[in-house]
Length: 397
Image (cartoon, rainbow, N blue to C red; front, side, top):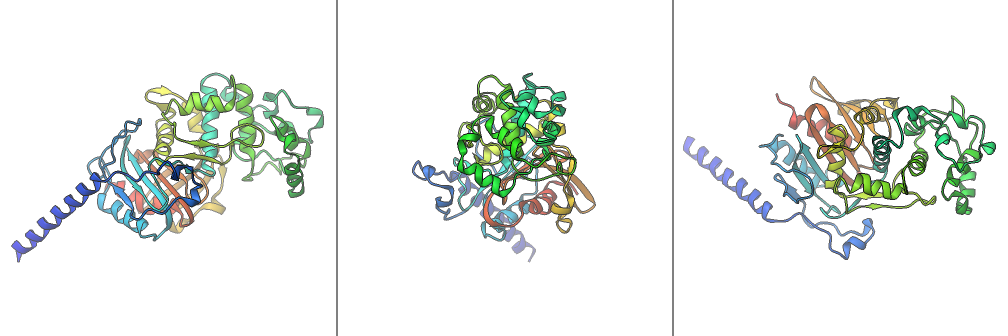
């Protein structure tokens, strides 16, 4: 009996090794040139999920390793990946893990492709925040400027037409979704009829003319268009345009070349949504943050800005906590989310860029972990999945 058991284990080991070997012979799914021109919703579904425990070195600036050997419980992650492939949690498109600076797990499902930029939704806000940080690193702004009136950086505005309290809006307030601007639905519809008035800084002028008065009460958290204000400041203070600045001083330096970033009605890059990134490039954004603003040894964003933007500034526990899934003390920083992920008797601070339904980058510094998910609705929360299923695979017993 003992010999039979040993033989069965040997056969299982051989089959497992062969399975992974065959998997490595298959390249990650790529979108064809024709598919790359399609709307994301028209991308054909993958016939089979791609799950890789030893990602390929694509010479794209990302170091690679092997799940299990370079960290993580392989069996736990593969079980989760198979459940995702079986659509147990809805429509995931990708799921990647980097540990200690190495990409050690990479998987694609449904509409996910290794070379296809995925719509980022509100994760775009986090990139806008880091672009402002880059401007600070290069001296076009200072950390002290974050507490100055935002309108002081915009020289094309007519302050005589502002509503009362406009000077109360600082960069700090805008970055935490607390500008206090309140535009009625009717006024928004009027703006849509005359988009020409929103060109350039006219967009901010229109908001500050037609908002309700800015008060201490109105400067409460409201998930709205405040990133527009931040992008306007970036465009005003950097040489050239915000679009060129972001490309030359951030994206190019990180080797991010295959992306989409749409233009808003103002003519500036969209700031709250409407960017697209590949899943691997999302790993790069997370790596930049976990390395405290450094990329390949160069300080792209000040460490002090990273620390503040990813800190708990505005409490959002009442709306976003999910204590049954180990997610508590949720808060908002500078367009970055924070929450405590608890598993067993241990708790870990998670910092994340979050976009609608699950375009998320999780940074867990205590575990030297970056987790990336992309999805399309309907889908279960990747926040709770990361807390309950991914973290335990990297916690030593």
